[in-house]
Structures are given as structure tokens and as C-alpha cells.
Length: 108
Image (cartoon, rainbow, N blue to C red; front, side, top):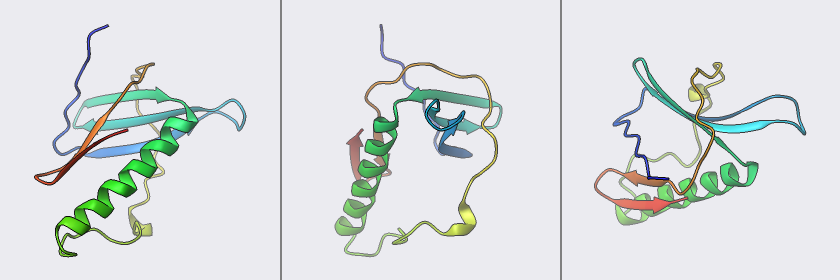
């Protein structure tokens, strides 16, 4: 299978979430910009690994900027996104590179 790249620069929305009841949940990532939506189903451990790598990436951004990068220590509660997911769904995932503009690239 060939590799597909979905670029949202910047996205209107980028969320991790679940669908279903505990024990039978499907975990997913979803990015959207205007009418364009990409959803990817993941394993629970992949979502946890992504969260850990994103935390490491943001720590590295702060370190390399000497503390001047506008990265809050904790996510502000007012930016919580509890809106329902949008369709369509993509049902596979692989390695995903994450980039902070001009600074650091990481893969999860």
C-alpha cells in the first residue's frame, strides 16, 4: 500500500476521541479544514503514544526556544473540544510525523 499524506496547515480542528461504550470503543484522530475531513481509526495504545510524543515535542519546542515559545504548561480548559466527530472515516493508521513549524519534527 502506498503512503498517503494529509496536510492541514493549519487545521480548523484536530482531535483524538472515541466512539462506543467502554470495552468496545474505537479510538480515532480527526483533522478538518473547511469541508475537508480526515479520520483515522487507531488502537488505544497508539493514541496514548501520540499524546506522549506530542508532550515531548512541545517540551522540545520550549527547550529550543529558551522558554520563549508560546506553549502553555497545561492545556487551557476553555479549548476543550467535545463536539461530535464528523464523517467520513478512514480505517487504518501507520507512522505519523508531527511538526512544530520551523523547529522540530517527531513521529508517533
